[in-house]
Length: 131
Length: 121
Image 1 (cartoon, rainbow over the protein chains, first blue to last red):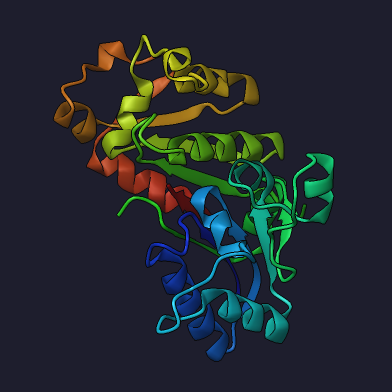
Image 2 (image 1 turned 90 degrees about the vertical axis):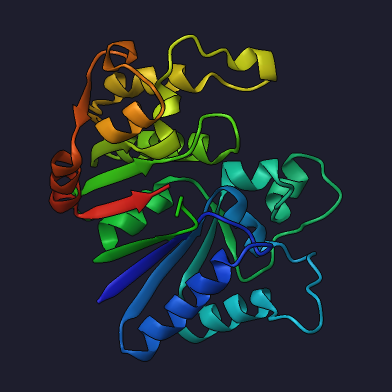
């Protein structure tokens, strides 16, 4: 079955870690993961400049491994990303900011890619909504 | 984009405490703009997004209820509010903007059952 995930909260919460575990579990059962769309605070998952504590899971590494292994697209929502200083090269240049802060495993895109994840996947699972 | 899907958005965040309410509303508009069949269900604190007299300017942000009022222009016509949440927040259905259907638990179950995908904000 084709899955996509939506992540609404950043690495300071347990939300992305749960999404990662879910992704790994579905892949291990032979399903495919088309896209992970990061929205709102979720875009902070793509920050290349974050420095995780040494005794904690390096989530960025886990996302990198995931996309490396499966070609799953990791997309951060552009409007959420710009507000939070999560910028790829072109956006940093366009807005005259000092640095690129988005990790190379991720790309920036509009909400249309969230909608497309919904139309092109059999399951769309949201992480980090109200519990 | 492949097919048209029935997308149900659950809006459960109060309008101004975080950016999640706005992100959810923007996602609804995007889905409608990409010609999906969108339904929206306000639940929990999300019903506060429907309160009249909101003024985002006063706190330097967009007025969420004005964006919600534009749903109709995007052909989002299936808009629901959870009766139980309205009553928990002391809101009278008469306060709600036009075009919003108040639903019971049974109505919520139908919304969930009819959707191809549920986006839970």
